[in-house]
Image 1 (cartoon, rainbow, N blue to C red):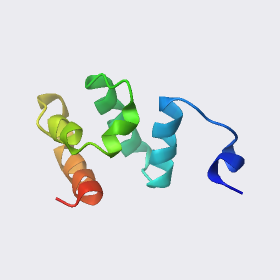
Image 2 (image 1 turned 90 degrees about the horizontal axis):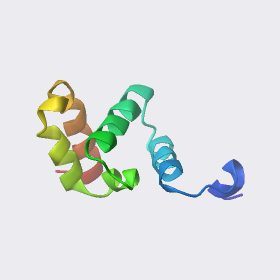
Image 3 (image 1 turned 30 degrees about the vertical axis):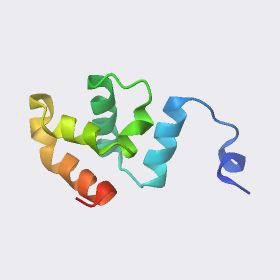
Image 4 (image 1 turned 135 degrees about the vertical axis):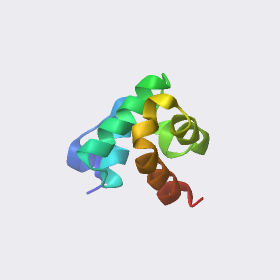
Length: 82
């Protein structure tokens, strides 16, 4: 049974973001951080955060996320290997 078969049909940007968080085993605290980043950056497609390194870089450079820089850097390195 495929992924959609387990969870039922899911469409839209928010379900994709949630599925990617689940797939990458992102804990609740980090998921909330990523949600805050997508809100702050006003992303229409939050899942872009998983494939567009510049978005995480923008968050890392934002004073609003200065307390989370290490967490964002760890995600950046894990996802993009840089």
